[in-house]
Every structure is written in C-alpha cells, then in structure tokens.
Length: 119
Image (cartoon, rainbow, N blue to C red; front, side, top):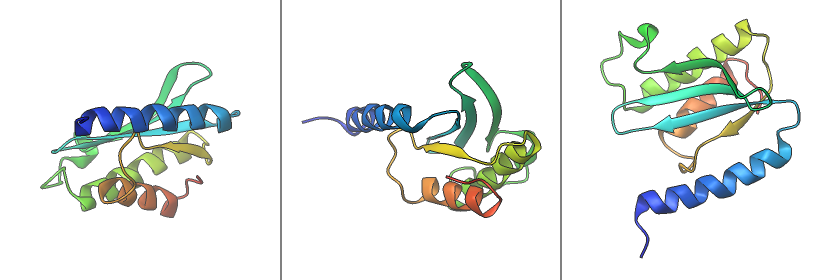
C-alpha cells in the first residue's frame, strides 16, 4: 500500500509529462501547498527561470490571519495574476504538482482566472 505522499508524487510525474507535451512557448504556473501555507510560481521552463512568485509568506500577505485556508489561496491567486500582468504574461499552463483539484488549489486557480490569467 502506497502512502499519500507517494501517490501524490505519482500523480505529479504523470501530470508533468502531460504538461511537457502542451507547454509550447508558454510559461507554467506551479502551485505547492502545505498545511499552513500555499505557494505559486510562474516558471519559464525554456530558460529554467522563475519569473514571478507569490505565497502566504510574502509581504503582501502579512495581513492574512491564516495562510492555510481558501481565502488565503484566493489572495495568492490574485497576487500571482497581478504579477503576471505586470510581466505581460496572459497565458500559462497550470501545474498543480500532483495535488487534487479541489479546495485550496481550486480557489487559487479560480482567483487567478478571475484576475486575468488564461489556462
């Protein structure tokens, strides 16, 4: 029987293989979550360079009372979308890093879409 972290790593490797096939001149919005925080990065895989990042640990998120809930995830989604807009990035490929698409991951994705990112 596999542990939950091993199952997530399997999902992550399957998803990354699919992402590599559709990446074609687009950047990747990579999301990671822990029990207390959520992180998002916009990564250019062609140059192996992180273009923008946002998390519940950033200065903009200091006012958040709890970094591990849907409201915090929505805030991070809006923040990463604004940073992408400043870099003239409108289309990304969403990489959920093996996490299931519900809860905080879905809240971050929906907020980023509402604030202008297309994926």
